[in-house]
Length: 151
Image (cartoon, rainbow, N blue to C red; front, side):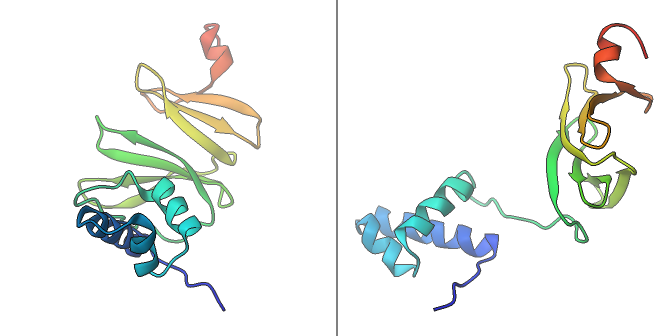
């Protein structure tokens, strides 16, 4: 029998359904059976999506990506950056407008992003096998050299 593929919003709805049923006194195993999935699937979903509570929703921000990784939120600028590794780019989503644009291309196959304590972007580049730090003015420094005061 072929396995059904569920969208994230369908998974969250099923997790909520189990929560409601168990809060009404139904046993967990029985509630899981009632949503039509195995216990293994239910607990995998709970681990992956269980933190989404209340009115949280999954929203698609962009299409055309092949494999994404390394999301980092810039709360002060109200935007999100993430890597689209096979397409060799870092994308940017702006909360205010919902616009998605290319932040950096080439990204040297960036596969991880974070921020330092000064709010600068730190990126792991697979192609160059280095860490870079993007300064507030947009210039990019090789991070270990920047730590030693070199550019």
